[in-house]
Figure 1 (cartoon, rainbow, N blue to C red):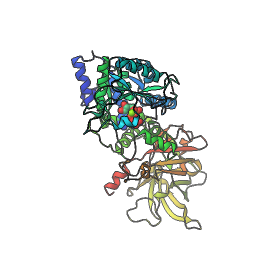
Figure 2: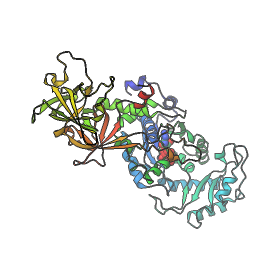
Figure 3: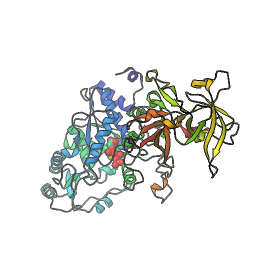
Length: 562
Ligand code: ATP
Ligand code: MG
């Protein structure tokens, strides 16, 4: 345990684990599991669960299983099995042994179902799914018992065997637990254990045509794996009654289920169904679109595993559902990259500058600091010459007094270089500014002001003849509303998508040291934000940078009226 861990307040799950260690409830063992269904890519909400499950096991000397909860043959795919493993590794966690699959327990689960039938605790129901739903009752009225509820054990065994043998089409029979149709907990009103699905499974192929329900799989899988702490999200609080009932009825090793609040983030959605729809409908370029809340999307955008782990640490673990501000996630990345990312200069919307008193053909090699937060990052040289690019936004022809950047007759400091004064403006026939004619002050090399002139705004710039071309992708919120799921009655949930979530700038100019930036390379473009070379679309010939995050939270600034 590190010093940090010792002084930090425990979250409520850690408290439970420490209590159990004290009382010897699990004989000192700590075994957790992360149980994704392979029906989509992992997102930032899963990261919260991963950090909690793996974090607890690491902290208390236990281990964590990765178990694919693959009981829905229609929706699952090996593409997801692979991506989930990649993402967990990328986040920095290692599971115990090989990945496990609930489908590997199908044989055992089947035998346990037979055991419950023999014990008179399960029966084959031949009502339609509709009838079963209708007869379940409501929270204020009891359910109605199925006419098949009292089938003889032998008949149940025979029917279940024939279900398994594929003699019936989908939906003709189900196997149900015989609990209590009048229970005040709807989940205990004879829940379905098995249904018939003539479907190909991504791992078991056509071996099975009956598939166990989530509730008849999950607890038993935990039990088989000798999990101690089965940590899941609050929606499963009710399911715990059933989790406990199955473990007790089967008289098997019985882990403890504990629920925590799932993560909801502003301006995005966390439902895999919705994320899949965005991918299928091509509202985004794929699961790894940098606007997606998926781990592969965040990674491509420029997020680091350290920032995501730090975010999960900061939000903590509670039992109250709420909404976390996206800014908390962005700030975790800012804090991480501020320490680690080297600074570079890039001009996103270039405006040409010609320095009339700078000799043609001359080049100054100016030293530039790589990271003011990290001396060991050293420095590099950037070339300065007669023709430069500056940011279009940094110039105004009719500038108000409060505009401190470049304007006709005004002077600014060029980062690492010289003072620069704008002498005149050149426009094209349409009246658009195409070039600035300027002069520089050779006595200000390095950006110093030797004669005590008033401090100037500092602009970033790139030498025109040395510049590297690049495409820059700027991202904004994927959804317009803070609560992305909040759409007006009757409106499509997608009506809330932000049409301006991606802006592509195709004529950016970068300092030459970026010419061979590798995919995944991250840096700060001075004054602009943190950027990352796109891992998919960037090539040597056509560099593509994603903006991971701006330098500051622009929305907070606006709110303060600045
Ligand atoms: P679906 O949206 O299809 O119901 P899911 O988001 O629950 O699925 P799973 O693959 O079942 O996805 O999730 C694996 C684990 O991740 C579960 O233990 C679940 O509790 C946890 N998890 C999923 N979403 C979140 C979230 N938003 N916050 C915290 N944990 C989550
Ligand atoms: Mg789930």
